[in-house]
Image (tube, rainbow, N blue to C red; front, side):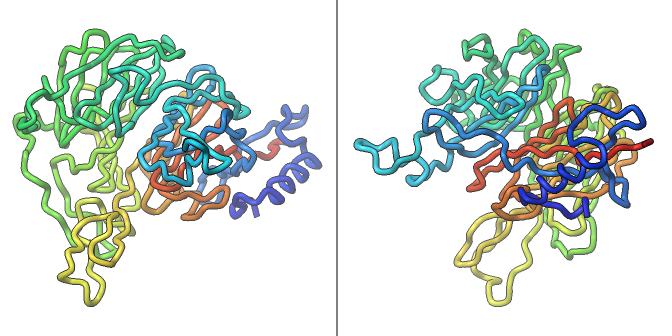
Amino acid sequence: MLKHIQGDPLRFIFLCVLGALLSGCNQAPSQTGFQEQVVDENSSPLFQVDPFWPKTLPNNWSSQQAISIFVDQDDHIWWMNRDNEARGDDIGAEFDPPRQLCCVRGPAVIEMDQEGNVLRAWGGPDHHPLFPQGGLQTIIIDDEGFVWIAGTSGQSSITKWTKDGEFVWDFDRRPTDPNWEENNQQTDILGNKGRFQLDNDAREIYIVQQKRVLVYDMDNGEYKRGWGGHGMPLSEVSNEPIAPYVFDGVSLPPEEEQFVPALHFIEISNDGLVYVGERGQNRMGVYQKDGTWVEDIYIGAEITPGERNRPPYPPGYENRGITECGSLRGDTPVPPCGTMYKMAFSKDSENKYVYVADGTNNVVWIVDRLSGETLGHFGKNGRYAGEFHWINAVATDSHGNIYTGEVETGKRIQKFVPVMTVAGG
């Protein structure tokens, strides 16, 4: 029963009542046993959506694309409220006079507590001249409590702020020549700086961009090192497109030594391994911090085309220009491609689990980090609690909860709590 419960509030209440009868729902361990998370037959931990989280946003704010989520050292949840697709029926109260009861655009940076109350909120196009303009992508809170945000447009960069939104520092490296063309060997100017990670101990910024990982000093922005796929030096990284492949629903994508764009995330585990998500190849490349390749982990690659694939044409549509994933060509919608959107580690000391947000299948994959084995997944495409539409953000807290964010027209954040039972009673 526990494996199949979804976002139904009645089932959630039933689970708590049942747990209370047995051991006390969400209470401290009893004298005869302790609480542990329920796992299924594949040793995949189970989670249940909290359908009442978060609280309603204040000030008539609308919830827009939740592109990035980060949980800080106080277990506060920070997320980016990207208004790329704010529709008229989302912001009808902005008109003069207002045309609807709800809503107006919410701030771009929102901090919440564990109960889902808004603690701080700031940011947006008018906040500061260097606030990322369009394409908001990543938010990270460093160990000193500063807020780092970045966007994907050329004139956006990685910027550092106080928790109250006061500007501190700008990474820059924006192109100034409108005719400038980027290559994988250049490190002083970058076209896309939106997907990055911080190594607080080494004081370094890691950026995934084009077909490479670049590392810069976290305090002064100086370039330090970089590498391409499987640890190759930047001088060997190709500037040509990766050849597409035809998805057959059975095979892995053809092997490729280069990184396969789009690179969608970079994360660093507690034991110092660097994980790079390749949406074009449906794999995570695992590296040491100096760029030494460790292994590749494929997730959902046989059942889902990577972003580099050529879509199989439906009968009669071979010559109607259907060439891209996740777009409309002619009169036939093509589903999105790739399984590597974002990822988060479980917060235990060993980072036992890897949680991968997959916006194509609209699930969170659960992977055993050390073995690389996919244990299971939760979620499905849909609009009900516990379902996803274009999930693109995932984060964890110290209590074992998982937070997710949706883009495109999903436009929401959700919280999933561990399903617990009493052991040793």
